[in-house]
Length: 338
Image (cartoon, rainbow, N blue to C red; front, side):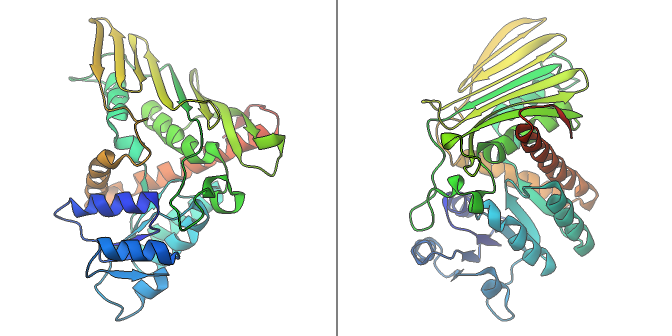
């Protein structure tokens, strides 16, 4: 395996893979000399290179079968294309694609090459997502809320997540590197979580955003959007300027509700009220403890090519929903079809 991009996410991945007996990182790629030097310290005997092409060149070193793309979003598509064209499976950080057309192009390329393109949607296998999913799941072990009728996600931050020194630590505020602001960044997490909870894509979306100084050339630093799933809705509030760091999620069904406020979970259903605690997702931005279940999910999907269409569908649906949200924001919040 090769980790491409050795910033915050790449560092977490390298640490995560080191704890797994069935995974071996043989190469790290990063354009920054400082980051390559750090990778060389942490990967003795492994190959460290400035470009993916160096790692994939014939005779360059140990064979690579999976490329984990952890670079800023502007590089996701070209790195993914290069890896797929070389016959490799790809795990890619969110957002895999900023636009629906690009998402369709990448997933079709993966299909043609017979390779898995897997999104690193780590909130999807997080403890908080398991709580929400179990709340609306049918059958034994479910908490009995029934199918979701409404959901609310509120993600508040006092600033954007910063990258590492040595390579554009504020890349999230660069339109050229990030491709968008908080809506594309953390909004992507919220969108695929909603897709999993409601079990389908929404029909319509409305969205408003605010930008630094009101400048249209600046990335969005706050957003409010509503996804309409027929009669069901998911309201999402995102901010990098709230003065606090907190995560709040709530899902309501015909038989009750469940709410996650950072580390505190409260549920209400026919059996009464219940409470439990989680490790707060607001604790840090790396979420190293979520890596293992995400990787295990990747391994399960990889072993069953009949399931490869599922992550492809989620990649495309997420991109087209976020793209529709930006389209709505450009129309002053008018509701638009997805």
